[in-house]
Length: 551
Image (tube, rainbow, N blue to C red; front, side, top):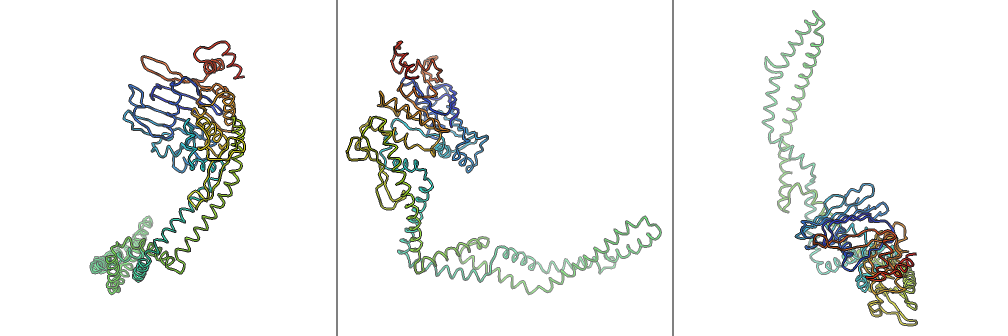
């Protein structure tokens, strides 16, 4: 739910800070006062494209921030979590800064974000229906989306699209395969030879590292042998060797301890050193023996290393890449064997087609059930909007399998008794289309839709008793749990049904045009409704009329 909107230096808005509540709110004011500017500013915060010329005169940038309470908006919460944008206490803040040259920056909870991210998140927060949005209802794609959104079967829609894509990709691969079967056979033969050579290498990354380490040691064998022999000579062969010197030291300390027991600790140290030196001599002798007996291993290791290098040079690959590459060869071999099997790719295509048919059939059943329900609801709304004999029908026309299922969704209407149902664009006039659009929008909104909705002068061309019905429909829509409805209107009958009433004004301050907005109290609201009813001159009769429709 939208809680706050702050706008600074945007078009004719100097600084504006608005707080909103849930329920049905209206924004009214003279034409040109800046009502649509507020919607445009919010749209920028929600990720719409910015342009130059929106920064207020004599300012270097426009700054727009919108805060939302998302504790009941699981879709927004999941998006923030998946995209690693922190959200504290279920509060979300979107900020957009636009500079004079048209460039801009966007932020989500204070973290820099790109516009596509903000726009994706914004789709879970606010829906804006403009006065021209009824033209989009003429598109088959929009009609299908309205039905699917109303049904709440987004999962089935997504599964159908995915299964169709998989099926078509496999089908294309199969067609390509049939054209190039000989090439695939040749690729399989070459890959089998390559894989057979690789298996003979008995190669592994860990084994390759050990092989190189062993080779380095064996290649330096003579140097190691000579060095160890010198160490052993210093330890035990020379007259002044460490072992002989240590033996003398042990004997000397043994006599000293017999004289003074306080030297016992020092004697233990000497004894320990003597043992360690003897152990060192044994370990070095064992190591020297291993070097002397492994002289024949060097040729074997060098042969293995050369085999690996020869294989890598042949197939233009580095030894470090061999293990990962071998897994790719293995997977490709499996795929080619399946493709070149008796049924090959055609079997995979058949399986994918079966899965698509299952998903599409389920979606068709859901659409049929929902279409009947939505048709009835929209017909009822149209009857309330002075289409007394109208009959609305959500038609499902079978088509060839597609990304969107096996049927085309189309909205049909008959506006007179016993008249044939026809597509709405062929039956309705401009004024009628506005009412039809409103009925469809109001009837098709479900709990799955976003919590905040803005209707920007969608009641154009409506008046009299119908206007009052429109107001009541929007009021009922705003009574939904955790729902927020904003309506920009020139109709007093609609404005009178709201819970919160905001007035947008425009005035000249210091030779500059400035737009402002405020929440009206009871008396101010009566005056505004009277203005909307009576024009420039407000009479007592107009005031009484305003009080009457507000009661």
